[in-house]
View: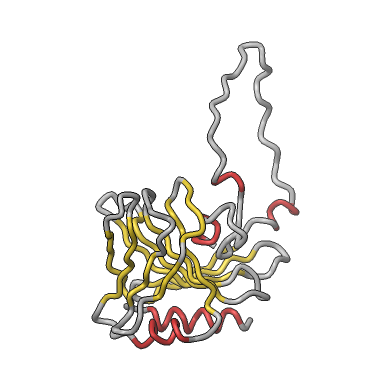
Length: 202
């Protein structure tokens, strides 16, 4: 889905992410020849093309969102996520949980700005227990992405149990080795994860 599609080029494809090579391709300006024929009218969409248009449903829980995408006969993909935006409404931090296909474990993906020391994992700080290390796996024009498989419920339990009136945070190092940190809201996380779990059973 959104986070999973943004991680173009990674095996996840990703979080359901997922992947279209167009996100990592370098834009190329193309000059039209003066002798080139004028473009014809756009083709009328056929019923088959219309059926391939993804159907997207979104539910909001506090500062978290649960999104599902259904494209044609393909299995539905869902993720729960939360984002942090700057004053220009650009995403500077995002965390998403979901799975690209039903036969793989749930995955947790973190997006931070570019200019990252990718050899050092990001860390999700949820409580006084050990930080959750999330290694970087991919960078593109949208940011740098870190990912772990959630092979058990430990991280999700810690996320669900965090008081909603407090914030978690994501720590990472920039390319100069300077520690960076941004707060991450957990308000609505438990409800969004419940909705995700319910959606994955359908």
